Amino acid sequence: MPLVTSREMFKQAYGKYAIGAFNVNNMEVIQGIVEAAKEEHSPLILQVSAGARKYAKHIYLLKLVQAAVEDTGLPICLHLDHGEDYEICKTCIDGGFTSVMIDGSKHPFEENVALTKKVVEYAHAHAVTVEAELGRLAGVEDAVKVNTADATYTIPEQAAEFVQRTGCDSLAIAIGTSHGAYKFKGEPQLDFVRLEKIAHLIPGFPLVLHGASSVLSEFVDKCNQYGGKIESARGVPEDMLRKAGTLGVCKINIDTDLRLAMTSVIREYLSLSPEAFDPRQFLGPAREAIKSMVKHKMKNVLNCSNQLTYL
Image (tube, rainbow, N blue to C red; front, side, top):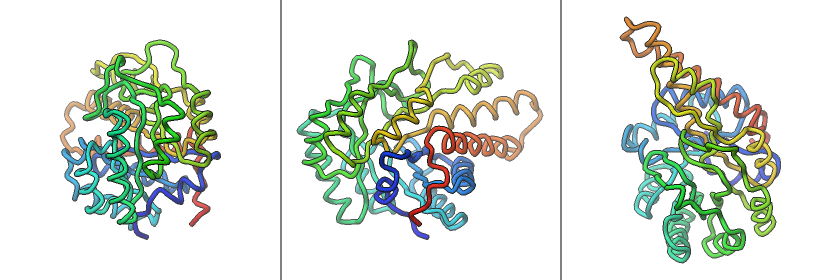
């Protein structure tokens, strides 16, 4: 089975569940995620950030994901996360990605519209789907760095206009999530009134949540127990993510939770086994931690287990 786009995935998911979009950086992360998806019989999006492309190189990640498709038979969508300009989106489209995100959220509205429309025209001519972004999330993740003062929630009326004018296939919105591990210091809240209004103005249109890791304390605590210095913080409560999946959010990005799960296992192993020098000894358990985390998300948060009914 070849790589697929997100179009049919979102059509089937809308209003019922969300699909996890998991960031990948190396072989063990990819293996852990796809093994979980196969066991859960779940639709799957693997996404690659600019930082991942710089670290592992485009060709290595592409071939690893293609190997995952061949190994599992899963219909996997390969997505560019936070493409900052037309050129990087074009490179990924030409290089085998089936979905790209053009993040023009830092630009004024009209510039964002023009940039997104340009990417959409090229992508659609090559049968690739496009995610855009309107509104800005606070936080830090790879090359995405937005101060809290610069964060802005998505305006529902602008979202409807933006989708109509650009022809994008999905839209990342800002309703209270945050990038990275250093999230909410107070009580986290998602603006469901805003979400419902956006969904009402563009009915049936797939919405996306970035910065949607829950920063589970068990992994933060384990990292810190074995030498980490991760500041305690709260992510997005999982019950809020479940609710969002019934209100038009079809794609939920998860990266930080995977990093924490993997890092906590590696820190523990090396701390308890200081004589270890074979990477397989700690990367194997780290892969299992990734798999366990993804299975949890699919079953208990995204509700996308056993949803490969469109095959």
